[in-house]
Structures are given as structure tokens and as C-alpha cells.
Length: 476
View (tube, rainbow, N blue to C red):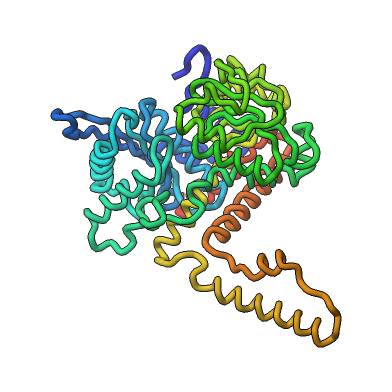
């Protein structure tokens, strides 16, 4: 429901969908089939805690089964409601289609504040919620595969996979029922950093397209660009670390729950993260100037703004004050439909969420494949690759000695060349390739059609077209 003229998150997703299908050649029936959420299951279950029964409400929504299994995280937050879960499930459908992972879209949520319960209580609650979903095949390696989201992580995924295996003792593919697990429980290297790493790869690809950069009034590379990050959780932290540590960007602002930190010379992201972990907020952190109204930092001068926390942080009340020429949506739905229109009219370039934060689902796909194949990536070929490289190095050095050339390979080159690709390197390579390919498809759409005005519209068109083709191939 709209509040003060501001569309809700669910309405924002529908409005963005409508902008895309308005310029597509879809039959009304197929358009409606893609738009609607297939099903939403609401569960209310009791858990005995502290000598009394407490009742919790959870959801699992399936937006589209044009491909199966369906994929989407489970979030634990007090803000969880049916509309939000269904909107997030729709985003997952389009996200998976855009980056060509063979999943439909789903999402889950439990209305709870995890900070109010200790670890044992959280395990009891999580296992009971998982039990309610598993017995209805709403967690299943072949039908519905959850992952972590806000308020959940490796710990919760380990509990869920163990609960699934207890209930399905003969399912040899049981580990694939969820992704985002710890390494010792069937997880994959690089999953924790995946969404933040995807933000980095998305920005790198954007900066390889001079025509797109010109639309944002930007030149050069990421090196030296001023960046403000809103939310230093898993996604924001990794994105800031990679952009600042590997690409030379300057992280001048970090916004958290209790306020923000600003330093025009650049913040030490790791030091801020350590302070946040110890104190629970950024107030008092010596790395920068504390700003009590952290949201005001969204309006500071910078080249790149990275909203990486909750939806709707950029809305109709502050959109006109945003100065960043480039915004990359690390969170789901951080810009409302109303704000999106204001920013587009002002010429701001927005790299949309359904592309920008698809790193998580991409590496989740790799983890799912790893679980189904029952072997770690790189295990079969890594040493053979190193042996072949060693043969080449030995032959070059032999030729140099025999011919008296007197040259040697630099130690740094030899070490890098001789190191075969392990799981982490292969995961990063696959993610980079995925993000590049997806961006190229939406950039081509953006630049190739006069009626496609921005990257979000282009991304929705590419994604919806792929979903439509899947449905048509099924005979719909």
C-alpha cells in the first residue's frame, strides 16, 4: 500500500515491470502469467521457549516455476510480511533469468528479531520453521532451494540442511537443499563474499563501456573514484573492501543504523568494521567524522553511491538531493519507484538490483551444482594444470641454458603461472564471466533501442523476455 504518495516495495516492483512490458510484444495472458506470484505459503508454528509456547509467522513464496528448482533467500526480520516476500520472489525470478542461472524465483521470511534470542533458541525456531517448509516440499534440492538473506547466514543454513537430512535420510543430494552453507557442511569457497564481489565486477564492467560512462558524466577507471556505502553488513563490507583495496576507489562515507562516518580522504573500511562489531554502531569511531543523521550522507558529493542495506532508503523525500551521478543497488529495492523516476529525470545512472546484487545467486548456483556433482571444483584438474605449466617453464629454462640466452623468468611470474586454479579462483572466474555477460546484454538493450531509457528498464526487458521464452517452450 502506498504511504504519503510513495509506492510500496511490492508496487515499485510492479511499476518497474509495467514500464518494461509496455514496450514488449507480449500477449496479455502471458504478461499476466509472468507478473503474478504463483503461490505463497503462510505458516504459523509454536516453539516452547523460556517455559512458554511462542507462536511465529513465516512465509515461503514461489513467484515463477518457468524453471525448477526455484531459488531465493530466507530472511529473519520483524519487517517481514507477505507483500515484501512476494515482491522479493518476483525480483528473484528476473534476477535469475538475467544472469542465466536455471532457477525460478522464490523467497522466504520469518517475522522475528534474531537479536532477542540466544543461539540455542534460534536453532529451535529455525529447525521448526524448516520442518514446516520441508514437509511441504518448500525446501527440496529439486524443487525449492533457499539461501541466506537479511538476518540469516551460514549457521542457519547448516541447521536447515541438517533438518532436511534428518527428514530425508536416503536423499543422496540432500546437501543441495539450501545454499550458503559453511564449507564443512557442503558450502563453496567465495559464497560469503559473492554479492559484494559481484558489485565489484558489475562496476568494473560498467567502466569498460565508455558510452555508458558518458551518460553518467564519468571518465577514467574506478581508481580514485569517491564512494559512499550505506550499510556495512556482509554485502556492503565486501563491496567496500574490494573497491577500496583492489580497484583504488576512495570510500569516503559509510552509513550505519546509528549514523554515518565521513572522511573525504578515505576511510579504513576494516577498522570501521572492527569498531562496528565491537561497539554495535559507528559513533565514536576515530576513522572519520561522525554524522548523527546518517541518511544525510546519501546526499554528499561522490561519484558512486552504494545502497547496501534495506529497501526504500532512497525515496521521494530525498531523491532530488542525491548528487552521485552513478548509483549501484547492492541491496534489493533500495530506490523506490517514485525516487527512480526523479533520478532518471535528473540523468542519474542506476545499475539496478536485479543485476548488481546477482553475485549471491550466481555463486549459490555454483554451490548447488557442486552439491549435485559431489566433488569440489578444481579437485580433478588443478594439479594436472600445474604439471603442464611446469613442463612449459622447464622447457623455456632449458632452451635459455642450451642457447646461452642468459634470461630467467621473474619469480613472481613463475609462482603465479604455476599455481593451478582452485575452487575460489574458479568461483570468482565464473562470477566475473556471469556479471560481464549479463551487463553486456542490458547495455546492448539500453543503447540499441530509443524507447529503452535506462539500465533498469533494459534489465527487466532482457529478464522478462527470457522468462517468456521459457513459458512459450512449455506450450503456454
